[in-house]
Length: 196
Image 1 (cartoon, rainbow, N blue to C red):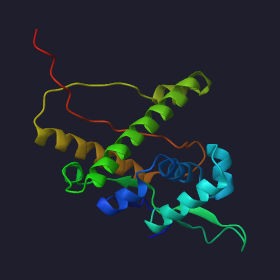
Image 2 (spheres, rainbow, N blue to C red):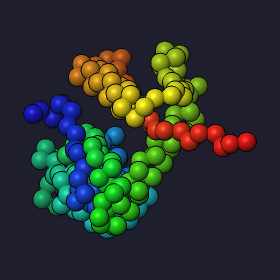
Image 3 (cartoon, rainbow, N blue to C red):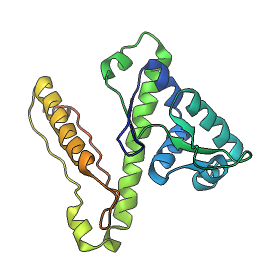
Image 4 (cartoon, rainbow, N blue to C red):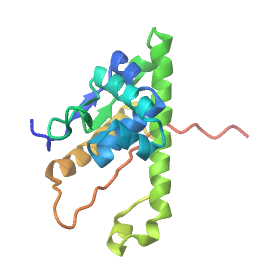
């Protein structure tokens, strides 16, 4: 597999415990978004101490989330890169119903951190929305839909959306005119209106 193929890390209970930490998730997101960096560079970017970023990078490496970048660095300077392009939880129920309360707590933290990061990215984009060329403003979307579905239909909908994203991701290339384009997918049952 080349470095240009999309690589997905599927979380299990053990790897979840390794990623479910706010700074670790921010470090991983930064490496995915901005590319390889040293612990010191990441510390400056995230407003943390280099000791903290170095420690948490080593923890991420122990769980397979990040790795040394063999194309960069010297003996004294260690460069890190993300080992995967994205992280996915296949067994949500297994995490929520796990016998170990640490796993359940880690999964809750993981979900909250992902949701917060998505909100931060969206707010950042909206803050610079008017500065983007018209074509990119028109290609951007912020909408929501409510429909009545069974759990099976909802799963099918999510799988079809994933399929479309995978299709575009497969043909996507970094060329003139392209731009990193974020797609956040949030799909969940909405509680019914309270009775009057």
